[in-house]
Image (cartoon, rainbow, N blue to C red; front, top):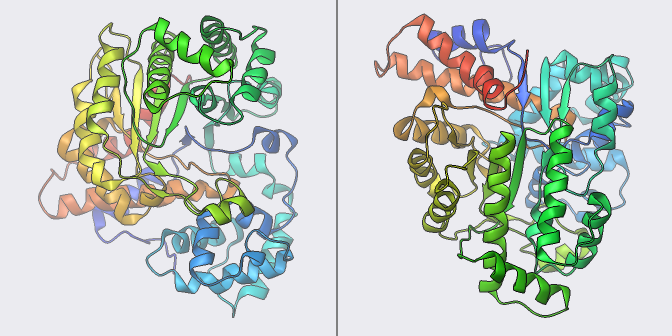
Length: 465
């Protein structure tokens, strides 16, 4: 199924992919890979471990295909779980999981067969045998794929031990950088907030007994992350908020929580707003990019949440209004000309044009694409979703400044998603050439692909070399 011209239907698209995009280095500036896994560099136990351990995309599809939970997150053995996924895949025509799976089989294992119950035994045996090879260890995979930079996702209280060890390892030249993810710092209404504050205090060396000390502790962690190569923050925002507040009002709310008091929805929004504005200005001072992932509706199935916990396939798309609170937040930071480079992602494709036009409001400072409408995310990370995101960006902004693709994944094999994106990008440009919508200028087309696949991200995140 995956031949050399997969997804490429025009001669221009084929030329752009094979001669320009295919072998370019990868900058994966947002993922959830574990730096410990990269540092320890152990072989994976099995294809089931690589594919199904923690992959809520696949878990969700398997449930829809009628697979019992025992074979998804339960105690079934590895072969039973693999066979259950092999049973699921033929039911996924039109789903990006089918394409990702077949790309991974072909790229890493040289397997052209379609995974199904008929081929499952042979594929299980071959992939497991090959996973024991030296060139299937994490570091070898990254080098083979020409990955230059990884941006992981890290809590402010993390010690970054494995980032430090990787940076000190002269035998490994892939840069693995932490990204500052302070969602727990803003979650003042979470049941375990006090417990997390204890971790922050321990990591920062600051007794967090007041809001001013809380901000001081965060500032110390920002300094620590920057010293260890951080290039970006990341924020998961279920529904965009903005409720103006002074530092004194934020302090009163924080102290109320410390004392065990209840806070209103407005107070939560006030605390989050003041704190996020404070953080955004710090990101600007460090030259980081700020990523805002907006729009999931999480843990919808309470019965299954109790059984499997968060991030296990029971999230979907939220429909909260985003334009006004996002505009007010960005403007609050920009009033003092301290808006950092910012990447806006939406989970709701309804809001694509809102994000693309919002980005245009805050371009400044001589930075190409300072505010980005980020790549298609999560449920939109498919052929149609990527096409729609890029067309919307092109309609409303400067497409050539786009910083391109990321995996947002926990799987080392997921880097084939960059190939998937690059094929779709080249196909889009090829279609536009064939339709007479853009000039058939080889030098300019080549520059578009090089910039969007690699160079723009390299410059945006200030990566050397």
